[in-house]
Amino acid sequence: MLLKEKVVVITGGAGLNGLGFATARLMAAHGARVALLDLERADPSGAAAQLGPNHLGIVADVTDKSDCTAAAAAVLKAFGRVDALINNAGITQPIKTLEISGDDYDRVLDVSLRGTLYMSQAVLPAMRQQGSGSIVCISSVSAQRGGGILGGPHYSAAKAGVLGLARAMAREFGPDGIRINSITPGLISTDIIKGKLSEEKKAEIAETIPLARLGRAEDIGGACVFLASDLSQYCTGITLDVNGGMLIH
Ligand code: NAD
Image (spheres, helix red, strand yellow):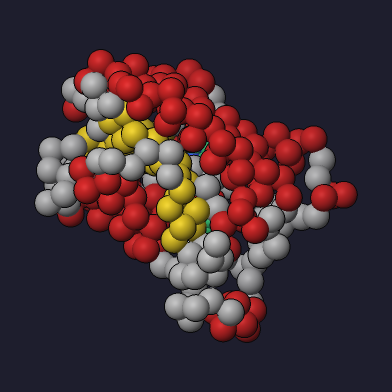
């Protein structure tokens, strides 16, 4: 039990095939109480109920600061503390530079980057008071290799922004005992790629990956458990590549 009695908040955590929910399942198995934050249409309460009786589902749009503040308050009211935050909510669009409108830019940047800032701002005061906490920011290999698989350049920019934000926050909050790290997943089979890549294309990509397969949601869950737990207690400001060797640098 690596997370016994720990309280974990996961944004975008209610999609049953997503990285966030796989992470929630693994964390619950390690003894954590989990709060799943997601849009209403993703039914966070229903997803939380699937984890077991001691978990919470909260409707929250991470692009809305007051939603983030209210969600953090609800978690503190229910569980009394917050030990880890997984900034996982994100959306992508498979379009090219010249096609990106202002609205596209806002939508993609707002969920990944603004959402990461707002949710971190919402939990940091409690973590500071506790003198401990771990924030994990889900970026993407797309930030490191310049996209090229699915997301457009604005997605790469959003995810690169997440890396910069996480590193700067790590520097700022290290003295408070709060660790802030990023994960850069490779290509993982979830709803985000559903219908966007043919089976043939996926097999073609798998052939270029040293571990010879696409990632599974659980692969990211394991990395999140590591970064949320005391196993990683001397890690802050790091970027953990979980990509099967797709990008080695
Ligand atoms: P997903 O689409 O299954 O999950 C994204 C979740 O975010 C959904 O539950 C969605 O409802 C939620 N969400 C969207 N907008 C939101 C908002 N404004 N407020 C709150 N929640 C919101 O996709 P996934 O593959 O599980 O992606 C999870 C994260 O991992 C994303 O940040 C994504 O960019 C990143 N990522 C995924 C891959 C991959 O290949 N699947 C690779 C690299 C990075």
